[in-house]
Image (cartoon, rainbow, N blue to C red):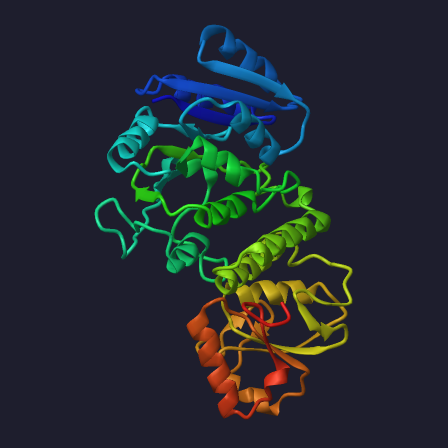
Amino acid sequence: MKISVIVPIYNVEGYLNKCIESIINQSYKDLEIILVDDGSTDNSSAICDRYAEVDMRIINIHKSNSGVVSARKTGGQIASGEYIVSVDGDDWIDEDYIENFVEFIEREKREVIWSISYYKQRGCYSELCLANVKGDILSKGVQRELLNLVCGEYGFQNDIEYSICNKCIKRDLYNLVQGKVDDSLTRGEDLYFSIALLTNTDSIFFCRNDGYHYVQRETSNTNNKTAYTNEKFLILQEKLKEFSSALKEKKKSLNHIIDGYLLSTYMLYFFGTVQDREYLYPFTEIEKGSRIVIYGGGSIGKNIISYLENLADYNIVAWVDSRMVDQKIGKWVVKSASEIVNLQYDFIILATNRTKYIEEMKENLKRLEIKDEKVVSAFGHKNH
């Protein structure tokens, strides 16, 4: 069985030798190694050429820069292997990584082998504790709860990594699903791919294959905040919403996941910066000049406070959380939620992504006879 390994490459000369060496030295030898140089301006192109000269399994493609999605599509279109494995040009894999995938394919006869574990930078292993795992199997079919495990509740804190690089996928299915991902996406493309994969096959086997080493570079698309623009965010929002609208099943669950992921992306790149909007993103009803109470003292509350402190157009009335009363965070002293009845405000933002906490907060506010129209939540909110 031939396995095609697709490696999208863009300006990773400091990492590329280790990446390619780890692939050509795999214990499983029946490989087709497709190096897709996506218009690199450093020495990556020459490195690809050098390896193509010494290993006949390597197919070397040079193309103009069109992004990682386009590079992955290009590789998939010329691949001849029965299955496809993806490795990013700045990452590397253990010697038996592909051999382990092949063993699962031969034993389980599935279209997708999906690893639930991997190594992160500096060799720090991230152990995933999944209550539903029985041996190597998580689920024999695509069940509704899988979306939450893969994408996380409201797009946060996912239990299963959704990177395209922890999967071994039958070639035709890979190309079908990759074809649904828009080339313009520079963030969220792996989430998009994984959701599309879950909605296009129920032939998935979840396993432990710990040999993928994921390197997080400061200059990568994920970590380079200055390179991610509001325009790119709007494209991600549009494409994910279009995808969700096209589905007949799981739409409600997907909408919650997509909403949460979009907000988490916005928080990562734009909270704490000034955005030219007539309302407070993502709350369309909170217009400039509004008086706001932040309910929730965790990381989401801190992000929203940080964001609002940089915007002179909004007035923070108070920060409340019954579990953190009198704690000082920055210049703020957290108050009890019961004090809301003594405050003058326009809106209360429920600053948490946990469903049970949102429900608890709503119950607390109901007991305080707070009107529903004054309460907004970032997660699953009807106007978000």
